[in-house]
Figure 1 (cartoon, rainbow, N blue to C red):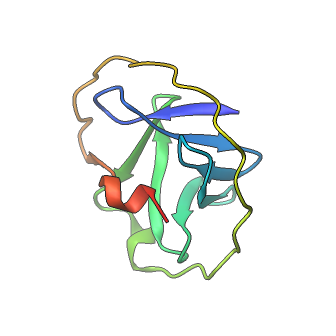
Figure 2: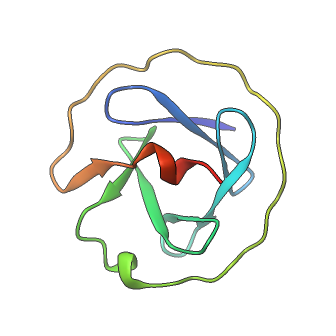
Length: 105
């Protein structure tokens, strides 16, 4: 299990067994290892891990225009707690925070 944060250090997701889950436990996405990206529940590009613990969206990612299909819902993994704020790093060049509404189902 890995806690993931936005650029402001807010806890936004958990990476558990190849799946992306909201802090409350709901499955909100899937990891595509061969591409190194996360997709949402509809199969659209969501983001990627930057600086080891930040889940951000690459503005010019070629994956934005691809539909990867539906990988199913892996259910709820439960609440892993709140790790607190991880600290702000500013927004790295070429990236942006993922809108909150894309991190829910």
